Every structure is written in structure tokens, then in C-alpha cells.
View (tube, one colour):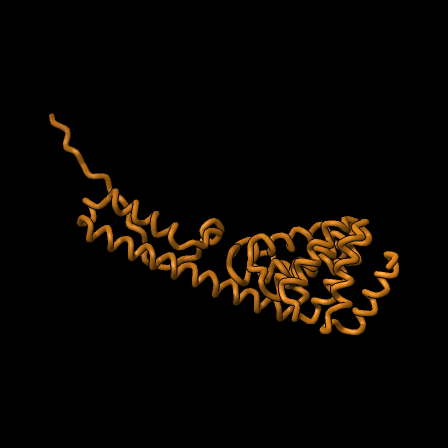
Length: 232
């Protein structure tokens, strides 16, 4: 008896938005997903009506991804708002947001809040972990990025790593010199360079603070004292 070939059934991607996985959220470049759907549709074009069907699948798949990501952002934002309303129970929620919604803006804020809390509690190792997570995975060109850089520097100072800390303090200050804490970060950079034995860098930063007409008198005075300590 002749065998009759049967077409292998393939499942079409559902257009219904669903919660995205951690791996899906981690890849924020839309084009990656478009290419994936196009390849699937192209290989199965004869089963879905040729090129027109393939293009339809591309549109459906792209829409699913956009909707799912927006849903994830909303869910994460709602959880973040709940966590911020109750400090006593915030830590587990922050942790869940970071792990389950990695890549969303809310997850970045949750990582920063966790880092800040761990630093306040004296857990330098955990604080470093979450400050680095924010720095490496989220936008640092803002006040949270500035705070994360300075927070990591604080951790490094507590560990005695003044040379590396100085670099992060300096980066934090330069993100936005108009930030209220920028001068404090810049002075901390000079002090950390001094503690690390890098007198040249410490002297240069302190002198720049003295020369700037915008420097607050308090930090100008501290910079002058630091220069005197360096033998100036």
C-alpha cells in the first residue's frame, strides 16, 4: 500500500498578549523579534497562503511582542508603586520585579532601591551587586544613574578600594554637574584619589573646584584644605 504524505501541522503564534519571560524582556531590540517571525513565516509560507500569509504572520507576531512588552511594563510599574507604599514589605517585591521583569524601567528603579537599602543596612556585597546591575543594564544618564555610580563608589570605599571608588565618584559628578550632589561627588573623588595615593588626580580635582566660580563655599573650603594636606 502506498504511503500518503501528510502535512505536518504547525502552530501559529497567538495574537493574544501574555506575560513575557525573563529572557524575552532582556532583549529590548525590536528588530530581533521581527527577524525571528519573518524566518518562521518564510519557511512555512506554503501552509499559510504564500507570501501574503507570511506577511500577515509577521504583523501578528510583531504586534504580540509589542503588546506583551507593554503589558509587562505596566505590571512591573504597578508592583513598584505597591512596594513604594509599604517600606516594611518592599524588599520581596523589589526582588521579584528585578528578577521577573528584567529590562523594564520599573526593574531598573527596583534594582536601585534594593542597592540603596542594602547599603543602608551595611550589606556592602548585596549593595554592590544591585548598583552594578543598574549601571550595566539601565540608563545611567540621569539622576538614578548618578546615584548608582556614587553608591557603588561608597561600597568600594567601605571595602578599602579607594582607587576604583574615586573613578566612580568622578563619573557620577560628571553625569550632571548641575545636580545638587555633584560637588559632593567631585570632592569625594578627590578625597578617594588622595587616600589611594594618587596625589596628582586629587590635586587636579581640588584645584578645579577652587577655580570654578560655581563651587559652593563649603566645598571650596574643603578643597582648599585637601590641597594643603597635599602640600600645596
